Image (tube, rainbow, N blue to C red; front, side, top):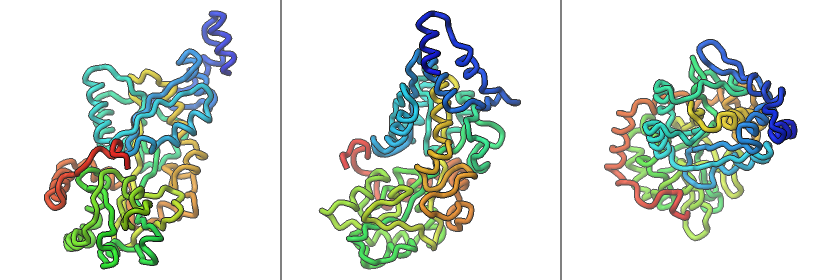
Length: 369
């Protein structure tokens, strides 16, 4: 397909019939939704044509380490020849403000956004800022993880916090309950992300305190935990041999674990899970490239090999995990409703900040940890 397009461009004959078909096969559905009917290879061809032989996608992804999402870039560029994923990772709470500024200035340079700030997406959709596009696999996304009446936004990645311990430092101590974190043997050994610096971490504390009470939090403070910025930082610090930090419930070793760690989901209170939402900007400079990225990320193989649980209902959990719907101690859609109540989120943020202080240190993307 690429050779046909290139040849047509070289001899000045415009688009080939095949490339034109690739562009037209994404059909408009009732309500203005564009439903993708092309194959990945056909979308790839259209993305290459869009870029004059080389395709580009500008992605802003939420995260707290610069290389945290490199696996997406590597998989995408390996699968699709002559495509470049221009990836910028930063805290979602900063990315969304940059999106708002581009919209206000009417100078959109980003194609795709995938953020933890799920409450932003309905607002952007109402502003007419998002493309009503249903990528390949959209119909298989759990209905609870996408908009009921449009394809402006939808869950692309299933994420969660685990209870994680360094097996060498923590020994055989159980962490199957959040109550285990206040045992004497964990004094001075906990490393936790500031809840007033990350909404998903704040949600984790809120869920635990709702079940175990404020007294649990007061006892946790008596353990003298080390507070850090970023959710990757606790795992990094736990794995270092020059400290005694051994456990955290504000991080994850990934879907497939990490050597030297044990990871469980506590049973005495709910733990955090959410679907990271994604959307394509209506005025994206590289719409075909963005369509290719979203369709690729919803591909069953990518979902299966990358995330423990999938946002798709037809992809079985990886690594022997139970079916997501059978989990009793997490409620993935509830995170969305919690995030939408910004007044409550702000009250909670300052309640915790009053007790542990403002988040200290550089951005986790710049602190070198």
